[in-house]
Amino acid sequence: MAKRLLVTGGAGFIGSNFCHYVYDKYPDWQIDVLDILTYAGNTANLPEEATRHSGRIRLWIGDVTNANLVDNLVSKADTVVHFAAETHVTRSIFDNLNFFETDVIGTHIVANAILKAQDRIERFIHVSTSEVYGTARAETMDEDHPLMPMSPYASAKCGADRLVYSYWETYRIPAIIVRPFNNYGPRQHLEKVVPRFISSALLDEPFTVHGVGQAERDFIHVDDTCRALDLLLAAPRTKVIGEVFNIASGEARSVLSIAEQVAELSERPRDSIVFIGERPGQVVRHIGDYGRIERLLGWRPEIRWKDGLKATYRWYRDNRDHWRPQLWMRQIPVRTQSGVVELH
Ligand code: NAD
Image (cartoon, rainbow, N blue to C red):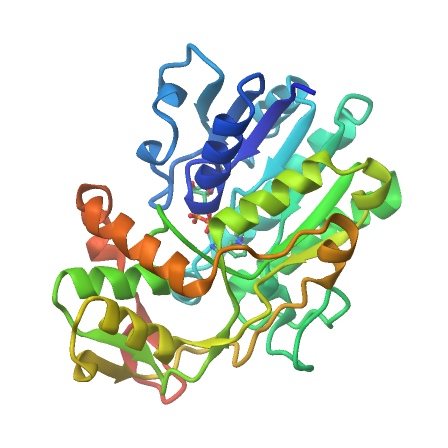
């Protein structure tokens, strides 16, 4: 059935990949994108039609904390997918007020708008994050893992996650919470680890690794995440509303191993990897259990890491004009646990 979709934060990395996904797959959907275009948002991430305002996708530049604006856009939609957030862990250590404003208050504004339009909104996907879990207490983390956020970013997202949950419990808004693990793929900002290593490779620069690079993460290709969101939009409401779903690969990958693989792909020597101080608030181990979404909707990751990494490398190699303006933002000054200020 045709949908009228509102996507917040749709000019960022995952949001724009999701917009392309539904724009290509569903020619009868109307897509409105609300994005304030911070340093992380880019109109070039979206289908070209978004800035012409004449077709099926339209970009509205505005702030998710503006209640009138959000109420207005939500009143035209039947489905809302909420991505808008400040998202970079290291930046949240450097300067974090806007993380709480956008991620917590912005989510409060969106949840209130949904509440006001409750009779018309069919479903509301809130995009949370695996960072809410902190370091794993078990081999893999399912949705019942304790929430122990370890950085200002993670704590802001955790507040937003629980706020949405409380609105489901209290008001029965049609909310679904997803907790994706580390996404990678095209159009990701260079501040994040995979594009940072790839851009270093393409510019013949050293790869900088935090600590000894043993922090392990679960990396999932953004197209797999988009497919999971699509399934959640199509699933019977009774199966998914009020639920929390991990979106993960179920595999652990150390940051050092990623640097080594990008070095290999770009035919750079192993000694191009240099080590800097550990980032404070670093999660040590993070592997997702995606059993719940698999059991309910048959979703499994389909893109193998090696294939996804190669395709991502090729995208950055072939789209240098897209990411060159972000180069200066790859590093942020951070006081490490030993008290030294370093560029991370
Ligand atoms: P991103 O930083 O690439 O994009 C965020 C977008 O939100 C940008 O386009 C930005 O302009 C917009 N935005 C920021 N403040 C806004 C405001 N006040 N009003 C309107 N728009 C605003 O982020 P991403 O990596 O695409 O992440 C999207 C969502 O997914 C976030 O909620 C993030 O927490 C979550 N998430 C990301 C990952 C990941 O690995 N990238 C993993 C798990 C969860």
